[in-house]
Image 1 (cartoon, rainbow, N blue to C red):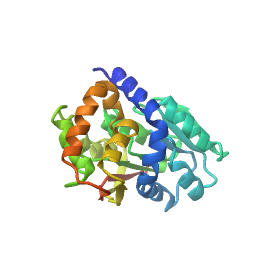
Image 2 (tube, helix red, strand yellow):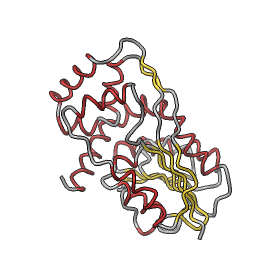
Image 3 (cartoon, rainbow, N blue to C red):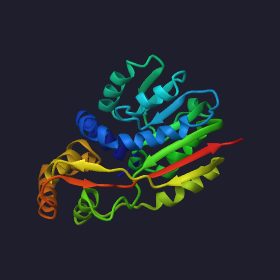
Length: 265
């Protein structure tokens, strides 16, 4: 499958998932959003807008607007469904803009313009994340900061993410995750200095295994796969996952990976 087909499938999946993602995952991912934003609001920035590629429903916006009230904050997302919800959120912030577009390769109009680039849990969905992060780095002005959080190859030893990964990989081969090892070199090649490479972990809770599975495949990271493979495939996964899952409330503490880098020249 080519990158264009993959992006089209990705957009289609997130169009269908947008409302559910906002309701279920945005509150649960809020601590990581705060981590990403804190990295750019804690110190001085050059002039320019803050760009949020893969903004989804734009949960970064209220935190950025509170910390950087005089900045333009621009969201960019491939999914029209996500952009509609992001625009509704942005309507309360007169200095915010949202547009639909491919964040895997930014247009030249962003090059060297931005004071900061912030992205939470979008990078790992792009066709070539290491190339994408290089494009994001090119958007920074001298003194600008990049703060990117994504799910790494290891998020937890046990828990719903780990259990679901095992079930899925019993049917679908694991993708090539070598791009994760190329991110720091990509940032360095783009002229940035990596200041932090951390693994922030936060508690997350789900009412039960069935609620988690349904949210994940209908309104979360599993939606594009569910869209591509169809209802019968999802039903088989669900039965296998629930058979291997504990009853009742399921709490866990997954870790993300957080890269913070600055353009000094």
